[in-house]
Image 1 (cartoon, rainbow, N blue to C red):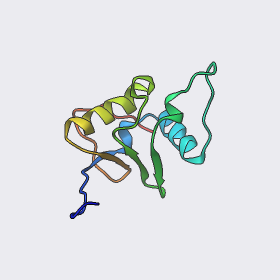
Image 2 (image 1 turned 90 degrees about the vertical axis):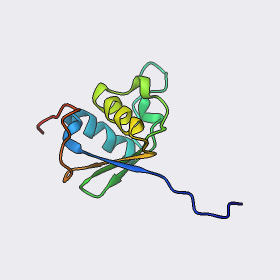
Image 3 (image 1 turned 180 degrees about the vertical axis):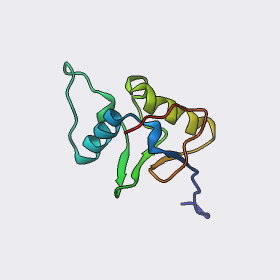
Length: 105
């Protein structure tokens, strides 16, 4: 048992850094809809994600399967990890950053 509260860091990125297709896939993950690709586990079954109302998603930066994730999602998780974050919040109201591409959807 710990004597102190564990603190974790949260990075916030704009949902614009994800493509519309990846956004739909994240909604599917949260809804429990996991595609099957040739019997192999896809990144969908390995990621820890939750929908945050209509604003975006929360994703655990340490989620497995990053090598199978779409480039846009992987780049965002890489950036969050490089910044020292444990969690990544995609927020529609967060300003995009110059270091990552944006998508208009």
